[in-house]
Amino acid sequence: MSYEFDFSFLKDYAPDLAWGVWLTLGMTVASIIPGFILGTVCAVARLRGTPWQRRLATAYVEGIRNTPLIIQAFWLFFGLSVLQIRIGPFAAAVIALVINVGAYTAEIMRAGFRSIPRGQLEAASCLALTPRQSLLYIEVPQAVERVYPALVSQFVLMMLATSIMSQISAEELTGVAYMIQSFTFRGFEVYLVIAVIYLGLASLLRLVLLGIAEVSFPRRRRLRTPL
Image 1 (cartoon, rainbow, N blue to C red):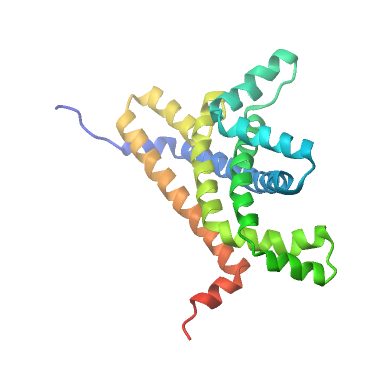
Image 2: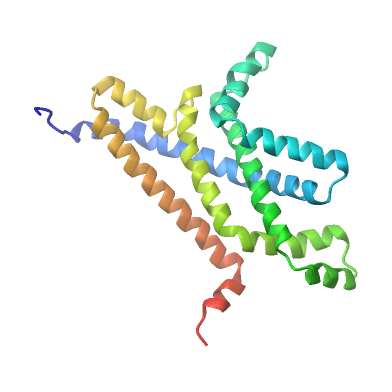
């Protein structure tokens, strides 16, 4: 094999790679909180909503979870343009990610709500808390704490899924890799470096989210503290 590996050319594309990383992180940050809120609302609707709310939430969750993310992004970016509704690549990517992660988060949060002991709800009722207060101050915090590892994994997967958005001209990290490879024809080196960058971003996001858990869930720290 006469192929000679060379990574030196990548320094010329460092600004492009930095922009791709920035856009990938921007999509991730812009999608996590709205996706979590949407998923939590849908979980509550499926558990306690009126019949039409349950049916609507179920249709959304099942419809999104059983169709590819790339098709959802295509529909937002290309499909809506037929109706003269034009959405930019970044906005379409973020909306698609929010809708997608919201559906998966709904099922995760639904499991979290169901894991809360019945006595917690009865205690809230005895304290004269309204259903809304019980949900916000008792159920949501406990549900999030119980399913937080699953949420972290889902959010990391969502960050990796931003790579699909290069198909709708969102120049995130994978889109930058396509561009560099088309100019240099050094696919092995380019995609190896991109894979390492994604590994670093995934590890960083996981550390940040676990750090948030350390601050937000003091009970976990107490349980780990040796007597």
